[in-house]
Image (cartoon, rainbow, N blue to C red; front, side, top):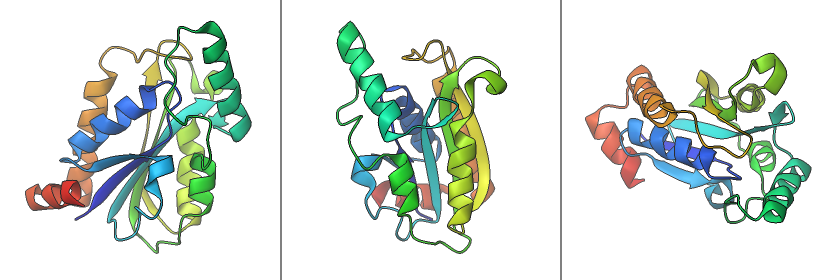
Length: 182
């Protein structure tokens, strides 16, 4: 089986989670949304994640505001191309219909009640279902502050979640090797 992880990240926290999920999947590729293009073609499992901005999936405006704020404080790392298009919303909008291909959604968000922070994974999962994907999992990974860092143990939890997804969809040893080679 062939698996990919597609992510959007502003400060690097979501990228770190995506890379850990990819490791848990047995070495799947983790691709920034700007590099994902047609990467979903031929995938048996697509895991998609992004940061929670303003109670949901980021927008061009929310990414631009986050990057500007980080540049003004001069202390916060910003991922290259964080405010460029396509963002995750645009990538999901252009995703081809999949008729039952399996997918999972994740986000990064503040360590507070989802009622207060919102959950971007819900919007990601909804958009995946709209394109015919069978969503087999959804998870939130927690950051200490808007810019991070990740809460202790979140990388390990992401790796374990990736392994759980691999087991659920049947990515065995040979499948995980194929996922990494794709």
